[in-house]
Image (cartoon, rainbow, N blue to C red):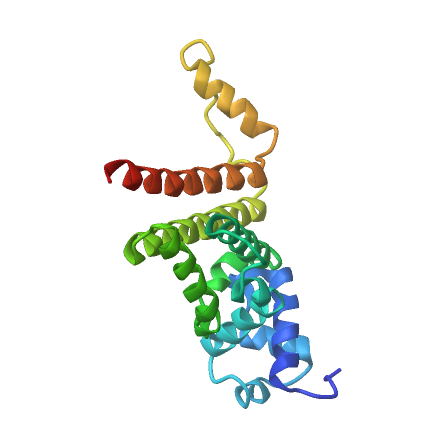
Length: 214
C-alpha cells in the first residue's frame, strides 16, 4: 500500500529503515520503491539517482547530533571537545547499519564548519599550528571512521571463517593469548577508546615537546 504522502523526508526515513534491514549493498531504488508501495519513476521526481539518495540519507543521519558539532560546552578545552565530537560522530554512524560507509556520502559538511572553525581556534590558542591541528583532527577522524567500519563489517559476518588456523600456544604464546581474547568477542568500545586515548595523548605530548624546545 502506498504512503499517503511521498516527499523527500519520507523517502529518506524509509530508506534508512530499509538500510538497517538490507545494508548498503542491498539498497536500491527499485527495492525502496517496493517498500514505499510505488513505481520506480515516482522516486525519480525526488532523487535523480541512488547517489542523490545516499547523500540525503547521510545528511539526515547526522541531523540529530549536529548540535554537539557546532559549539563547545562551557569552559571545555580542545581535548574534551575533540573527544566529545569523536563520540558523537561514532554514535551517529553506529545508529544505522553500514553507517560508516554511508557517512562518506555526506552531502553538506559545510554545516559543521562553524564548529570546526571554533575547534581549530581552541587548538591554535593552546599552541598548535593550524596545520598540526588539522592533522590531529584528520587522524582522529580516520580512527573513528575506520573503527566503525571494522565493527560494522564484523557484525555483518559474526561467524568466523571456516578453516581459521589454530595458533600453537607453545610457539606463539602471545599471539595465542590475543586470539583467545578475540574468541571471547571483540570489545569494540574498548578498542575505540584505547585508540582515541593514544591519539589525544600524542597530541598533548606534541604540545609538551614544543614547550620544551622553546
